[in-house]
Image (cartoon, rainbow, N blue to C red; front, side, top):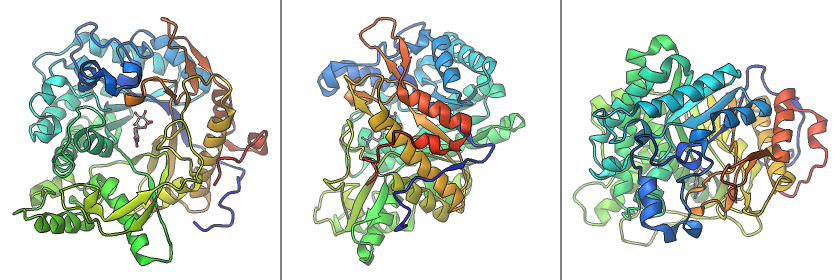
Length: 492
Ligand code: PNW
């Protein structure tokens, strides 16, 4: 990507059938945390039990109150002109105990009504089954470290397909399992708040991959006549070699992406198994640590055959990039990051945002799309999330940075399609509206629509970026008009 046009915006249209959408997730918007028979999720527990770890002790108890605001949410989608809405189902809202022993009909009524309202307005649903809000009862038996969860998840998925599937064209099993496993089970940052950097993430990932494969196969065996596409959404930053002429750095950047996206994608999109480089790294480190077996679990041949190919597209969430240097980790404690032998950082001169980790590097998205195309044999790709945060006190004028960010990033998607022939089929902006940004609470606003969290009614108002996105969708691409009032401050 040492392309001389790298920092230049291009004009052009997206393919006629390109899908434009916007995304949210249940815990971040719904509220209604204990209403109408909903069970507790690990995020209810996490925010209630240990408020100090969340910005201003906030939680998702009410959030955007979307549980009561179907018509408001659909109205802003309609105004945006998107043809798809990506939302997630709260597992404990439909199965309060996580299992089929109790079905909460009120929960299904909510999702049924939402889908009805969407379709009545010409908007198709893309439904995520797991966006991090595990039923607490299932955490009580070990969460994703417990192998039984693969079957329990499959039961939940099966029920959702049966109840909602006649009207859903796109299903996503898991959102960003890398974040679930590392932030949730590795370093005690997200729910369920486990600190086990060398072991639990690998165990949790192993169950999640099997759970994904079961749900995929269940859909294909029982519901294929409905013809939906089903897959998984993975996340990784784009790994940029510190020195592109240094072989160790080039290998390190690839290794980093194998440990994040490849951790899940290699089995699902390639051969049913973990990347060789992960098996090698974790195996060698485990041996040096005096362990009798690798901390990376193994799949049986039967499991590999079952997992391989369980995708209809590649769901990608991407926000930022990271610089990688190949360097042997000198630490001796078991640690998923130490296992990689990669030193990573984001240079101080990169532009920043309200989210410390989110440094805009638009051309990194094009690089990542090309990496996925090359690595996984040119799958159809949906960008299921991309966006930027602004501060708590930011309001409707979000031209810089949000319009600048979207313009630059979406332009890189167009280059990937036009110049590199990457099969990108859709783009979903994160997020439709400001919402509960996990441990950052309501202090980081990702929305195209402003939500007033001081007002009990949680009114939504379009920001300038919503109008810009609407015009982009109407034109289905970039005319020179999209570049007016441009600021290139984000394009590094
Ligand atoms: C994604 N990080 O998560 C999620 O899918 C969304 O729910 C979330 O709101 C969005 O990105 C914006 O953060 C991430 O700390 C959360 O590196 C945190 C990180 C990355 C992704």
